[in-house]
Image 1: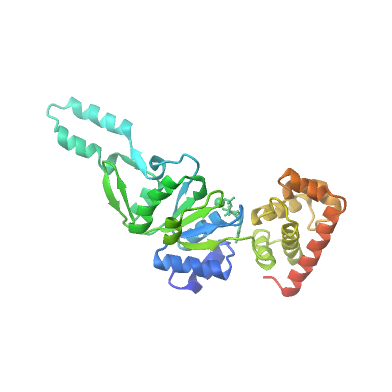
Image 2: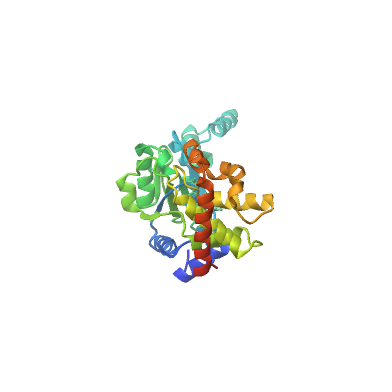
Length: 305
Ligand SMILES: Nc1ncnc2c1ncn2[C@@H]1O[C@H](COP(=O)(O)OP(=O)(O)OP(=O)(O)O)[C@@H](O)[C@H]1O
Ligand SMILES: [Mg+2]
């Protein structure tokens, strides 16, 4: 997918995804060695987006399997299109001499199978990105189904047979760690933790999304994020929430968060009742704003992009 680490780094940047050097080198090695990449980390830290950014950087498509409790083989791999099969039988039955044996074979061919994302990914002429998103929402039985795919790049489908990959996709598995992903899948994958970014990287991300704003604003948002994450909140804000906050400030026509903005900003920053109470404490928000200013000044001193 990528000829060199430098090429991946540069192409990822042009997609607007700011990855750290460890993430970039892990993606590079995983693509070169055809290993799945397991991404774990808090909500909103950029796991799903990384898969899309890699696909854009490689100029290829994403096949996405969104996992949820109860997702089954039919959703993931696909199923025979029964109404099409029935229609075919009805049409054939009208002709005088039907070869039922060959009809049976035809009905169980790929023509009558509507493929799900796992099968579609294997059938592409050139490698795509196969995103298996939020794998922690499924049970172990479903995980086991993926092992064949990720080990030998083939799928065994009842009545259809074994389908081998035309091209080997770059597989990205993501998890919010609601359930521990099993060791067999871990063994086959490279593992990358996607944590909240450093203040410098966060300022860069904010700068990419709000290029018209000042460096002080970008560093200010990153400073506030760092301050909030130091507050032992139940649900510390993620990059995506900081980007929402940046947009909200634009709508409010300001580039600075001040202590008197507590009530209007609280719904964007505190997402549980305990966190809301914490930020409502007397002087709580004011000291948060103070910490944020310190971090922001530090970030500016160290220099941001
Ligand atoms: N490194 C980054 N560079 C640029 N944008 C980022 C980065 N990380 C996160 N974002 C922004 O945050 C948003 C949310 O990221 P994403 O949906 O990938 O998070 P996630 O880790 O998949 O969260 P969840 O676990 O809730 O699904 C993205 O749409 C993107 O705008
Ligand atoms: Mg996600």
